Image 1 (cartoon, rainbow, N blue to C red):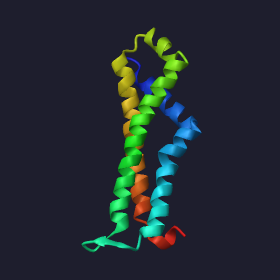
Image 2 (image 1 turned 135 degrees about the vertical axis):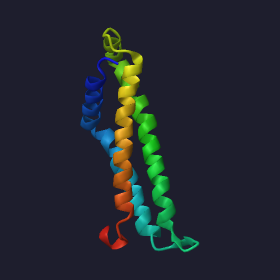
Image 3 (image 1 turned 60 degrees about the horizontal axis):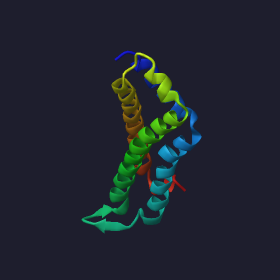
Length: 129
């Protein structure tokens, strides 16, 4: 797997420079958690659990899945449109290395998203106002 480290770095830099990707990966799902947590956070959902106990994991799974599916697909389509994949194909880097590098970034983003969402979901409702 020649070139894995530079490709992971390139994917990371490309993702961190894309403001739209950052917004829809981190801020957009957090807005849902905060808004619905403030609206329904004190309501009981049954069995003594609150609505946020069900809402936060669902939104977190949606955010992580959305980032994984669209993060990989969108970046590869964009690389294809800009002929970057053609340039990478001419290097000794294999397709497997390219996909593993993107998978590594997706897993790191998923871990960071999960930690961020759980932190926000565990905040008391008074801390968000």
